[in-house]
Length: 410
Image 1 (cartoon, rainbow, N blue to C red):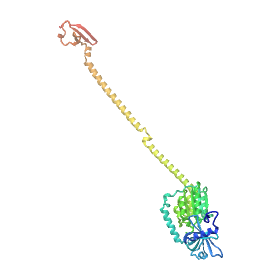
Image 2: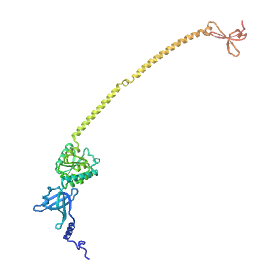
Image 3: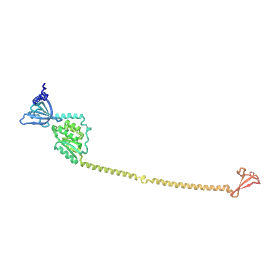
Image 4: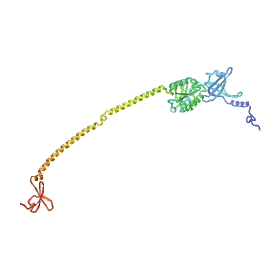
């Protein structure tokens, strides 16, 4: 049994058979509206057909278009590379060359109003997703060692940034990536350069720079793919696109927006002279503050030392010592006077006692007679009856005592 044609090496399709079948399948497709940027427009002399390459600005994809020459020449706006258009055409496969193209019957240029409306819709979408949140902004390093720069080749923006940055800080280094900055090829090249610099560990900050231009010229910097790539970078990104009035969406996603490329260089690189002047001023201010503090503390110490309690710390003790000495002298004087007075009084009392005492009486020739009882206790003799004959007597005189025997009274 013979296999169906095209399903075995023994019974293959001829080239024309495949081409005719592919053309038939594609011819069954209906006409479609397609939007994109003109990447290449070719108008050959003496040819009634124009050839256009239509590119998707958000992806590395393109379509080949063919259309009548008059459709391009008589378009309401001038068709050039980078023009955003909407075309209506029918897919077509040319069997003679085996190529696919879109046969265009209508071309409409996207107006400025429509472009701005699309940018506004994209802005609201990215804002709702939080890509503009200030809390997600990465801080710019104070002194970046290497600056990644994405800009056009030999552009004024590159010259301004490099000149201003090196003038402010001569040691700064640049990693420059030159790309196209407008047209259909801008977004893919800028995204590749951004990824390359973000992966470089030596790059501390990335600057995306371009000079001024029309809304159409700055369209790549409001592209959704580029905005999301900036948000995904781990390295801080500075957007320096156009001039002050220009405000593409990448300005809102970037970590820092600079009004101009020159402003970007000033904001990411410190000025050597200004920093040295600041250091000098801070040193002078700190030295003055330190001297003022030392003088203030020295004045405080001098005031404390000038106080009497610190100037003459023993003055209070000396004053009290003099009082103590006077008190001791007065006490000693009073005690001596009291002792002398009492000594005189004791002497007078002693003299009186001596005069009135029995010893003085005995000294004048008198004697004290005592009877000695059997118990041995002497008693003063008061009456002759107390000393009968034979009683023992003790007679005390001035220089001693003698014993005697009573012979009776007389």
